[in-house]
Length: 144
Image 1: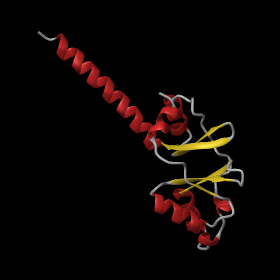
Image 2 (image 1 turned 180 degrees about the horizontal axis):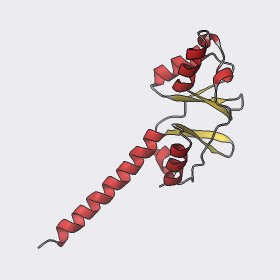
Image 3 (image 1 turned 90 degrees about the horizontal axis):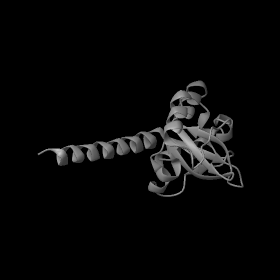
Image 4 (image 1 turned 180 degrees about the vertical axis):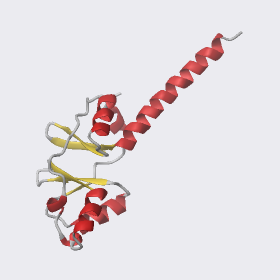
């Protein structure tokens, strides 16, 4: 299974924010859409960063004026991205080893989606559940 198959099951375009918007704007988007991270895009719609709930909390602990700062001030700039054809097992390994909870998916320089570690775990669970059901059916069919 690859990321493209996972994205095909998700609805809607990824929620994004511009670097010049405020952290308060980011919080509103995160809360409204019940998500944990936003991909930060430039005017051309290309990813330039990512900002998560954790980024905001960490900054709030250091700076009480966090809500008036821009997303560009606190975002992670060196974003690790994935391609639609990437295998979910390798993506899961990368996310676990690098401690990444959200991974933007880029194709031809354009943002095409975002996946979370929860999406990856659910896809793997569903795959294994299907395999178990197939094996159970085969075992039951072989019994006299």
